[in-house]
Length: 274
Image (cartoon, rainbow, N blue to C red):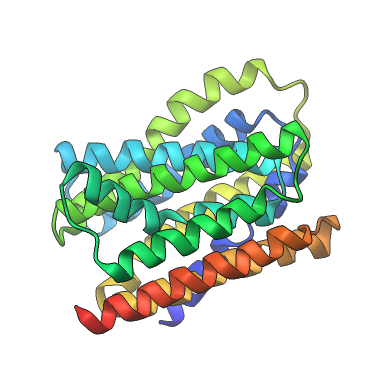
């Protein structure tokens, strides 16, 4: 549980460092993931975790890569609070994907979770009405959908560490392959401080946390992992407010409370019935 707390806190520093780097969002995502891939790959080599190439690991990699790219882009277009909280609507999209693709019937509780989260999402669009912020909100929702795809694919692959870690490794390699060549064209200058910030993002915000998550998830109960993970959307806007002075609007704040509350309720009730 302590490792999971450290993991969530490290995840939460992403927003502020993304705001501090002037590069193209795609270049930030690509370089950050390239560094993270080196960390994750080194851990897998040390633990002798085999790289497993299958439809589940590849699908998980595509989902997480899409999430990583969309999250960075959303952070540049809208507030950090909007970007992270809307991404955390992923559990609801897991339910929708399961119903549409795998023909799983939604129970009353699940319909309530979907409706509550959608209501929270709608609130975000009441106080961020500029075109950039609206686009950023939509991209943040897309990040949540991609994250849901990752969770669904890992779940379909069973409780297999090699599938989970291989999917993470593939995601960061794919993000680097897409982000770096395209992002370089949209980046004007690179400073020494920005290189320092991207190293923090790649090593401490992405690479090490995924290793910690892989270790923690073996011993920490799923409910505890889910609830402790909620520290990320809670702390991320706090760091950005302290160091960049960016604050979410009142409707976004209410929407965040609704979404985090609904997802927390869903995690607790689902654990009790499983």
